[in-house]
Image (cartoon, rainbow over all chains, first blue to last red; front, side, top):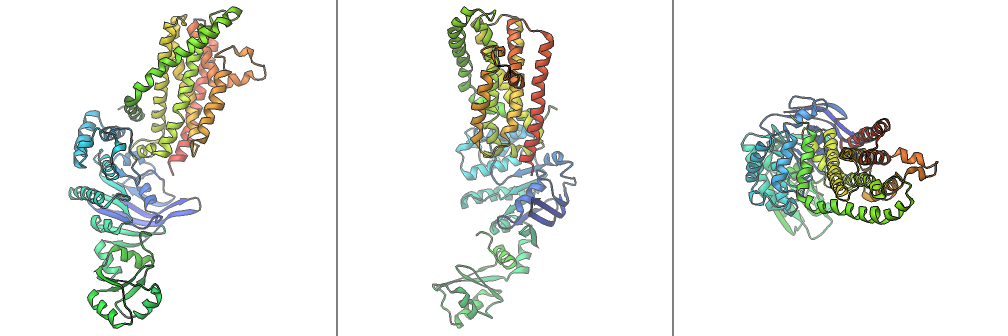
Amino acid sequence: MISARGLVKRFGDFTAVAGIDVEVTAGEAFGFLGPNGAGKSSTMRMIGCVSPPSGGSLRVLGRDPVRDGAAIRARLGVVPQADTLDGELSPRENLVVYARYFGIDRRTARRRAAELLEFVQLTERADGRVDALSGGMKRRLTIARSLVNEPDLLLLDEPTTGLDPQARHLVWERLFQLKKRGGTLVLTTHYMDEAEQLCDRLVVMDGGRIVAEGSPRDLIATHSTREVVELRFADDHLADLAGKLTGVGERAEVLPDRILVYADDGDAAVAAVHTRDVTPASVLVRRSTLEDVFLHLTGRTLVE
Amino acid sequence: MAHPAVSVLEWQLVVYRRTWRAGLLGYFVIPVLFLLGIGLGLGGYVDQGGRLGVDYLAYIAPGLMVASAMGIAAGEATWPVLAYLKWNQMYQAMLATPLRVWDVLVGHVSFVVFRTLLASAAYLLVMLVAGAVRSPWALLALPVAGLVGLATAAPVFAFTARQEDDAMLSVVQRFVIVPVSLFSGVFFPISQLPAAVRPLAWLFPLWHGVELSRGLSLGRLAVLPALGHVAVLLAWSAAGLAVAHAVFRRRLVW
């Protein structure tokens, strides 16, 4: 579906994407995980054939995005980071108008619009104004719009950024449905839970490069421990406290507000912590997440 | 299959379907006010001089019609274009589909021309009722108005697409559209202008549109100059579209 070799995107002196290799196969849900400015959106724009690569090679659906951009775009569904809906029109009109851009005849466009409004649970709002929809509804409408040409490949740039938890879950649930039908999904996110829930395989990006690749489970197994102990203290000299924890678990990370102790057995690590001369205000044992993978690989958190 | 730009025109028509009623009244009110106020009111005095060889009303009406076409085209080529480019990124959304930059540009420009045609048709109707039309050839003033709309919209699209905010957009209206309307032979022959300024009137599309429109409406258009005027309007249209396309590409493909 997608094949990139040494893919580069430069804007003047700034290198947004610094040579990445990516392979996405049919039926896969693939993610780009990374903080803002990691180069995810630039990569997505190149894959979406709206931004010409500055270097390297890129094939999308087996074709060259620069030469065959329009033909590739005809088979893509794109959910951009910002909802680019026409707020003056109704959801139904948005879908029909968009379908016409693909050369889909009016009758088919109207039928698909009705089906997709049903799919994203917006039938009741179909003929009101888009401006009156909530953020989550607009996102779902944008997803419906991206499906209007029955795409072979769906590109979602930060599909749930800015949504409240309930709205996010509704979006995820719809994306799950698409996944179950065998659709190929490529998404960017800086939410590790989103990546864990939706992606079969992902790459972790930082500073325009890929720093790790694998399934969420593999990444956690390779780059983190099974469990993590989160320690919070009333005292804020966390670096000094961390010094006293040397040897507990495999390693520790000091964040501005807490210390993370990485250990395969969290409870044993907690017991070990209590033998040291420290008195944490709170102790939490949890499973490792992709957030921990990112922290370990880059020394920074995903969402600052 | 229809040209892809047609789907962009369709989108604009869907948007327009929601708002046309509000604008329609204006399409009739403006010409009535202008023709009454200037054509009949001021015209009463002008006709006493008798130097135009025709009623002042019949003299200015076809000029007013194309001047209004220019104004509408310029308005439609400023704020809406910047909105779609920048504020709601409608153009970006279209470019994620098989549409190309050229299709998006041509589709939107076509809609602007459509609106100038609509407004000009209303103008022509009011002129007929007011008895300001002297020849059946006046019907051809309609495509002339459309062409003036195109020759205005295309370069203004290019100008708008270079803007980051709307500060300069009202400058176009005040310092280009208004002076061009006043000094392009709509209200008086440009022979009244100082010889040094006259070439400025020849430069802009409007004077050519006014000459064509008036010639048709009065039924006294000479073929050779007419071809020249059409050529100038086509040149503005083609050059404007070419520059607008380049600016759009730079702005939208990065």
